[in-house]
Length: 142
Image 1 (cartoon, rainbow, N blue to C red):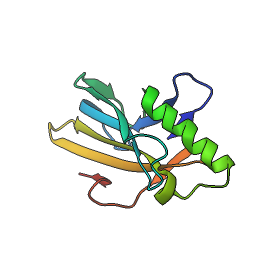
Image 2 (cartoon, rainbow, N blue to C red):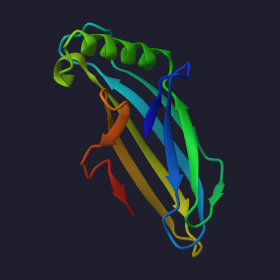
Image 3 (tube, helix red, strand yellow):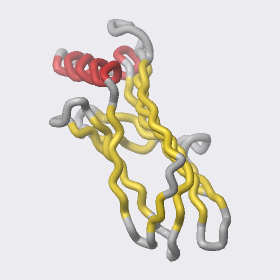
Image 4 (cartoon, rainbow, N blue to C red):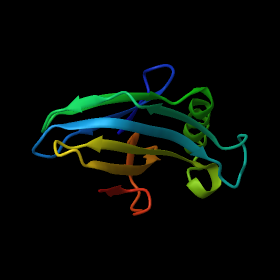
């Protein structure tokens, strides 16, 4: 997962990869990029942009499908704020806030079993990528 910083509006790229040995059918996906305000409160309130789809998508075994989600203008504005504060030497997430990317994917295997997988990532300003947040409430596979 990464931020495409040369694309306006900013986008988050992520991959749906079928790591199983048989085809899977994605039946529902919901992803959200979210800015959680820090204690300094320099920039407004929390902001988010969500995309949800019930379009059925077949993914073969070992196949990877790239997806993009617009940050939305409010989250993009807060990303600019975080970049500015980091340049000023203030990059403590507790003070300036953080950007998270979460999602849940429901899929059906060839036997008809419906399963879910979920993820929760936080944005790393240095690498311009999202990293895993080890939280079993948000990070799991069925």
